[in-house]
Length: 401
Ligand code: AMP
Ligand code: MG
Image (cartoon, rainbow, N blue to C red; front, side, top):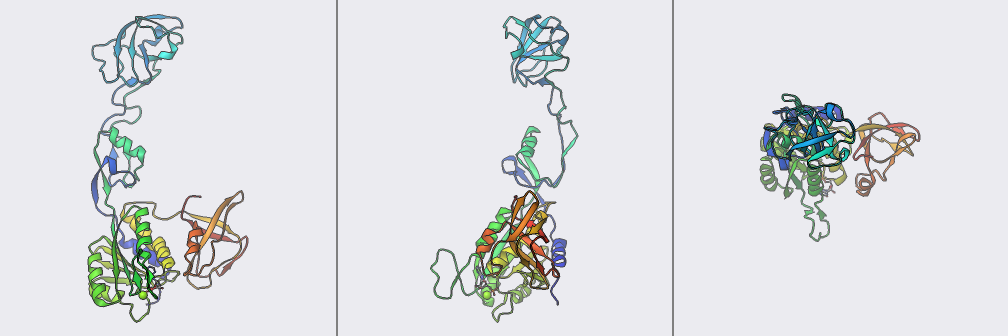
């Protein structure tokens, strides 16, 4: 099977990445979650006409400057206006948020009066309707105020709470099992013997999964033998998504694909025309997705970014699954020495003339530090060859500029 183009691979994955079921989550844990159903206002907001200010409930027609009104009542916050009426020539002291009494058509803020207790002197005229928040003027009952797919921010959580809801239906977050494979690997914290490599991929992948809002499950290290891989892969297949790293190239101990097949996982592709990340496999275990990424740390991070992250976001119900793609002007040289889609780690800066992109360092996939200096990925198409000073390049922003 020839390698799939980047677009074809991405499309194939997204075809099978579908939003997970909804779950009911309490208010306190909703921020960042994605609403699974439309929410219509169950009540008017505000629920009743109420005062926008501390002051006096009046009839606006009475309120010429220096008019004196008799104070006939008091409605503090939390009280009802039942039985209270504002008659001509009178005023009722009222607190912010308290319900508007019968007969009142305006509020005079306390600072526009002498603050009198028995009689109050009005210092500034008001118009009918002034400083009254009318029932439903913010949100009317029945209004479809939040749409499915909305990422909940504090403002949306406030609204849900204001409707007196205690939970909201949101898409489940995928659990993502992460398995590193390789005889050479030891866990961070250990002192590697000659030839041993620290398993850093488990942690960068888990960090990337957590950062985008899914739930990582680190499985540890499987050794390059059939027993170890079978055991760990079987454990990983209980998650919504399994990501394995390493062991899928052409090495004589690269068993990952073979073991996946034996555990009943159906492989859809195992090579993509991209660099880095070419030997990436995508398989299905029923409706669950299995990604096998190369072991090289830079390759595994870039493959996650390009092929896995959008799929996980789609599973979480997100509509905006891709990083923002912008056009930038090249500074220096950006080279695609392959006939594949080439991802280059770049530094993008905002200038008066627009975005400028330059290489973040050595593009060899063995160089981890270039990743640290990059804030974007330049995407060069298979035929793009070499770009020079002043050329245009597509850049995918990894963080806001
Ligand atoms: P492989 O895909 O098995 O050929 O591995 C490619 C390179 O990535 C080798 O140098 C491995 O030692 C390295 N590597 C594999 N797995 C990991 C890992 N979990 N963390 C860091 N480096 C790894
Ligand atoms: Mg290996």
